[in-house]
Figure 1: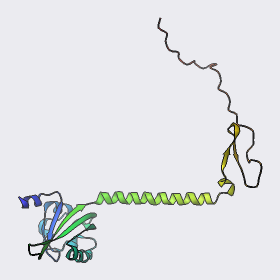
Figure 2 (figure 1 turned 90 degrees about the vertical axis):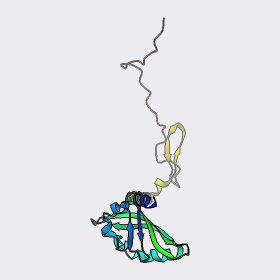
Figure 3 (figure 1 turned 180 degrees about the vertical axis):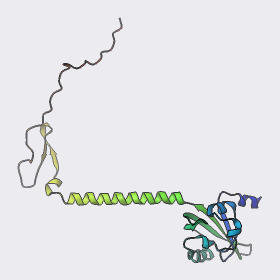
Figure 4 (figure 1 turned 60 degrees about the vertical axis):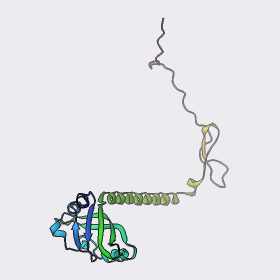
Length: 193
């Protein structure tokens, strides 16, 4: 039952010897990487990574802490690259002797694309904010003065050292609405008799 569960798991699972050479891959891993089992077995797992030198870092962490997890870039058989999350553990026997490495792979390509889009949007927003700040810095000092609302809804902008507003002091007058002359009257509710 255990063998069938691992073989048919949705997670891409690999087992490697202590040097990182693959001794087992399940169907999900074969589908993820695009390699048949016979093509992958016996090869170093890091041969399928973009940065194969990461294996030494991972191996050091495994022998110190017993596990490692992180994001890597993989190379499929057809040459395309994809992002995946690797969780790898050092498997030991009852006496504590290291036997092999067990890794679980998760394709995170779509998540990474979304993260990149969010970072690009954040960068554009920051650039826009900087442009806005530069624009406001280059405006005349009058622009930064408060706008005062006075009687009759008039709007005045005061400059320091001046006693008169920059805008005329006449109140703003809106035209009154025209009577219903020439326009249809609003409907009245029907009277019940």
